Image 1 (spheres, chains in turn green, brown):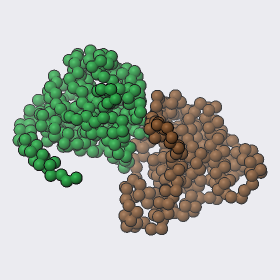
Image 2 (image 1 turned 90 degrees about the horizontal axis):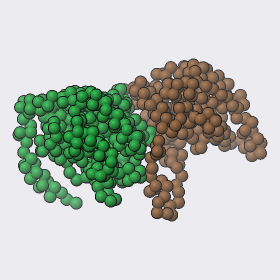
Image 3 (image 1 turned 30 degrees about the vertical axis):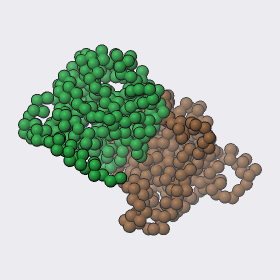
Image 4 (image 1 turned 90 degrees about the vertical axis):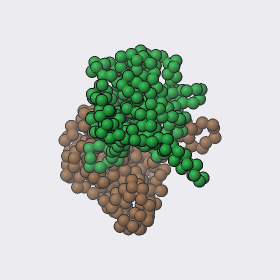
Length: 282
Length: 270
């Protein structure tokens, strides 16, 4: 299977321009004979939308951009980010997975970072679910940016037997050191290495590049294999198209060597977690 | 506090290029004092935009500090950027003839705002955007003139401490004559920042880094070896200068107020 990570820099609030950028990238990915192309979080709209968010919200079932994307997805899988109007007045930071001419999943961001420089909770409604859906390449689960840093979210995908975690991101670069990257790059890879290894699954993470209001997005998109090995990494904070082949049989191999998934007991975790949650004091 | 200068250069040059480009500008303009910050900013802009797309304005008062003027001129030659020199004495002298003062700060602030006024006019004539040159140290302690040298369209240096700008200066081959100069706001001849603030930039940056970046409490910062009086003085400077870092408050009377619940990105529609 061939995956393309489109480490693009969408323009803020300009769906038309971003849609054209998607078309170009999809076209190039096709020429590369890719099976799946990932775009970053909010790739159709840009990230720092604030009050612009409601004006660029789309309904995937009726929207004409999505009609076109569905057609394009007949011979290449797509993962992209957009603002979704689920019902009147409720907008979500969502990611869509399309393949075979259909929308296979729309994931609504559950953990909306609202601290320090982040204010997503001011503008978006939170999603409620993490799920895995069947795809032509195996069981896949979507994640959006901050969710990727939640081991609970990863566990929910693991409990559903995830084989391919598809994460979209608009993570700013933060923190300087003597290294040739932002200090914040490390946490994404730490999580990816641990989660791919301990779930015996692939992780593909596409982060954006470019600048919005002075913020440089960190780039550094990557793919980890089921042995916890990083197969590829994009340049920090720079536009890039990353092409990587993966061998899905590595999932079977890794899970045979280390049967973490087989030996997991979600029902015990669930029961224990229920007791823990019920014992919380206000 | 040590930074990877090559990486920072790439990020800041990208910032200059993209922020200007998004606004439809390919050119930058900045005031050159012959000091460190404006020299580093000019060097970054020259690399980001191409030297022909950078205009350096040298804006002396009379013939004050000829060495600074010479250093600024020398820098423009080294970088290959465009340069114009406009003496501000014919603008500010009539004002102070009518409104005399011996207060050096009043004189200095007025001159800083005169330079700002010329920069904005020249930026419109040149179809370029103004690059700010205030660093993180100055911004945090409020060491700048509001609507004077603090005014700009974009600021590439505002998240680098002075000592980090010095690292960038070495990386960018800024001449030693400029790098070894005592930092000055240039409000009056012979003024130096460190004398006026009463602390060296090394120490000031170390304390700011503890308080701001590492989120250490006052007692923790003092506990790590810093002088109590200095830490408290710096805190007072930070607190007292927030107004220079913010848009002025608007009296909220309507249901939707600019800055409160009318919230759009700076890069709106760019």
